[in-house]
Amino acid sequence: MSEIKFYNTFSKQVEVFEPVEAGKVKLYSCGPTVYSHPHIGNFRSFLMADLLKRFLAFKGFEVSHIMNITDVGHLLDDADEGADKLEEAARKEKKDPLEIAAFYIDSFNAAAEMLNMQPADSFPRATEHIQEMIDMISTLVDKGHAYVVGHNVYYDVTTFKDYGKLSGNTLDDLNAGARIEVNSEKKNPQDFALWKHDPKHIQQWDSPWGRGFPGWHIECSAMSSKYLGEQFDFHTGGEDNIFPHHECEIAQSEGASGKKWVNYWMHARFLMFDGEKMSKSKGNLYTIQELVEKGFKQNAIRYALISSHYRQNYNFTFDGLKAAETAIEKISQCVFTIKDKAKGNAETSVRDEVTAFINKAIAEFDAALCDDLNVSKALAAVFELVKDANKLADPTAGEAEAIVTAIEKIDSVLGVLKGAGEEEIPAEIVELAEQRKQAKLNKDWAAADEIRDKVTAAGFVIEDMPKHEYRIKKADA
Ligand SMILES: [Zn+2]
Image (tube, rainbow, N blue to C red; front, side, top):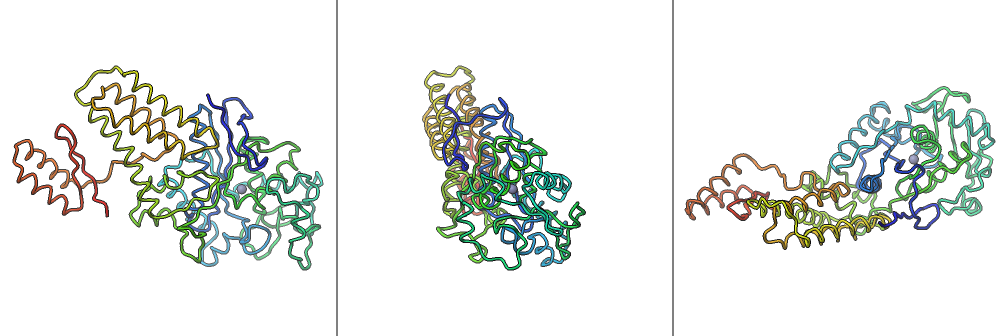
């Protein structure tokens, strides 16, 4: 059995995975800030966590997964400047921040379901964990890691010797590049807010330091330790979370507990769109819903987003989505065909050479994912299995079942076959296809052709299968 290895952003090395607790995995993922519709770039990192989680379950681990929902405190520039993203959206849309949050949580959930993401065990919300954050801030003040100025509380980064280790940003480098802040009440330019006082902020809570609201970073430290404990296995996010967000989270959590916090940090690299950076101004921040409206299949979007290595910038294109549809079709067609070929052969035995190619494919799939989630290599093993299965001219029922079971096992990790090959075919088209089968059985070729033309005109294709069976598909647009 291969060792499971992952690249750890913290050590900048590929490391062998050892769980904190044997047989169990605890995973925390930075979730959405619910002020707008999440886009494909956001889902690349959420799907990296989903693939990781499904793979660890495939390896027999019991996985606990927590993904937070940020509904307060995330400011526009990711640090301590600018308006709160939720409040800004609330002002623009003339709604309450909680209505904004509710609306975009629904949007996130709908897209996550379209992408067949396994829901986390819990999706804690920042606004529902204010007390936990206040408690952690108080601990940081008591331990000398944080200081109070008026009604604000800041983290003193010079008190945490490992500050900068995750991102590689040393305090000297950061200070050299820092803007000179006029009238700053911070001791050091890199200190960050844990609790903020702002009379204009809509969402406010009482605290030992007066009414205010929490900084963005503290929510992940407070909520992860509430749900996963003071030490756990994985923390995931997008590469844009590395600094300042995750750097600050480490300073807070380890500053408060005095212990090592997270063992493996995994970050997904940015997505490009058609070779360009994705941005609001370029109009290429597509949402999942928009791609589905354009006629792309949900599982193809998932496939495209997971099919290249998470540590590479993936270039997302519409052609790539079409290629993903074809790839999924190949796998689902293999399942359909092998079952069809085995009809009428009730033999349950499996020939040795069939067992051999199935085992080889599963072993290669497994080994590839053990190698820091090398998904492209894992997919190559899947298509090798499909090729070998398609070559079987006369599979037994037992062989068909073994192949289908193997593909289902593989898909418990990939999650791309849900809904594949089950397109909505209108009843009248199904009726026509059935009439055509009868016409062919009666050797009335003229009638069969005429019916086929009607089906084609309606935008569908009948594919003939052995033993007069058939399959109806939507014609490609
Ligand atoms: Zn976070």
